[in-house]
Amino acid sequence: MKSREMKEQFYLAGPVEEFLPQIGRVIEVEGQQIAVFRTSNDQIFAALNQSPHPKGGPIAEGIVSGHYLYDPLYDWKIDLTSGQVQAPDSGQLHIVPVKVENDQVWVAALQEQV
Image 1 (tube, helix red, strand yellow):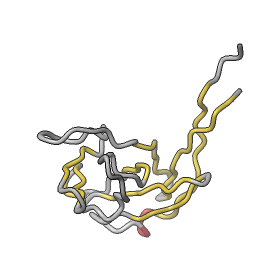
Image 2: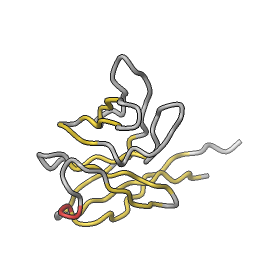
Image 3: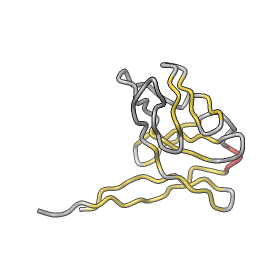
Image 4: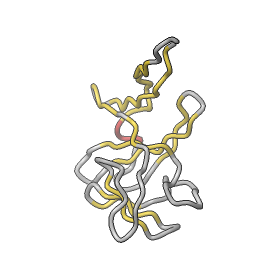
């Protein structure tokens, strides 16, 4: 049986200035919708654009305050550093690795290696 590994590959999402503070923007990477968020102090976070709520839905419409995302559909508060939904609710948002180099935002996609 072959061992499977996950390999990160980063894709250019665009210049930092294209990502408005406190508002999510959806980009597509390897067929997946990724929500990219910029905080008021210019930190960049990314996550799959899929709410961890049982009913699902997009999360890009959420509002960012500090490093928290406020989901307007379900009134959930989500920590963008960990993806953890805050009490009294529970769940886990899938956080996507992101990096900023030369004022360009790069978002990772995990690709399975066989």
